[in-house]
Image (cartoon, rainbow, N blue to C red; front, top):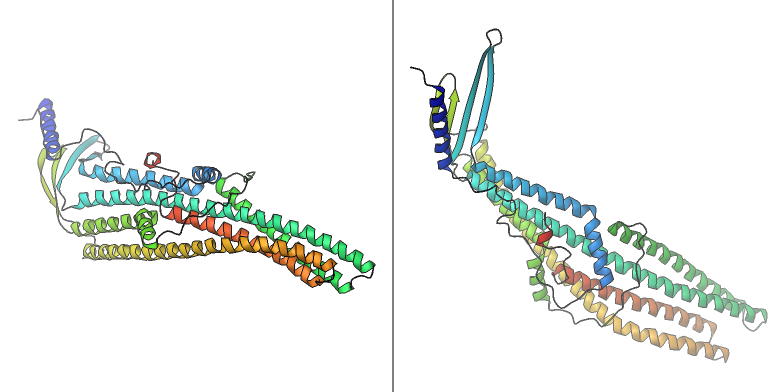
Length: 436
């Protein structure tokens, strides 16, 4: 006796209901960001950066291609996570066959399969996708931090070179004035020709330094413009070198940097992903149990359980599981390597900052002293108590002291900014709400 079409429809409905009860569906599509612990920056300290530099950082982060690429990677990781979560849902297979074109014999078949037990394969895939998303988010923040460091370095380099160029240009004007003075004295046979040649030689040296510094300043300016994506960008006034805070305690700063470092967070997430991949690889050697409903013209409706074991050529899955375990070990070791590198960077910056703070005091004193010495030597030269070589050396030492003070101030501010950024104490230009 043939089944009626309405009976077949009822059996189909019952089979789908049975599969649905095996794994209850959620009320809505799972969100990619559900359950993700993002690596937010710790709350900033009382430090407030210069408005010009912070605005430049925000603009660079908003426009730089590397940030856009990291943003796209985060979006892709969200899609991967959604895809991994969909593995818990039933899979459908619908086939249409044309057995005999002459006899117009067409058949259709439908198969619905719901995973019941996969030995942790699906759960491991979801954990791996979640860890990959955490790694993508940390990579996004790592790209932002690198832009912050690059902008700060280029910004301070430009202003340092701009100030050096101004000092050297002023020194060049003084040297040219000294050349004219000595030319008149030589013409009057008051001073020997060697003194004029000395003045001209020192002037030529200053001219070379001015040209070199101008080229370096142009290169730094171009670097800033490329970072912000504005070929016509012109930096504002240089940052005012205020009093520098005391050097922080090294162990506390290193610990704070470890907690904040996006690169370390990315490596930790990659280690979690490698561990989840190892679990998936080990589970792949165990058979999978599924509930199955099928229908075709030959067998009609069928509902049952399927136990499926699959091999990819010999014992390749066992080897894959072993390889996944080794990758987890490698990921853990990369975390240790990153911690060593970060500790080295922090301690090196602390030493440079302390050295720059000490040099700031000494160079400021030397700058004031050499200026007074130069004026005194000029008066003593006119009265015959100092030689022309003493005057030229005093002028050169005054220029050198001025540039040393500029270098010390720039080094202190640049290193302080770098320490604040790497420890998470600088206001981060993005938050979790900005993540895709």
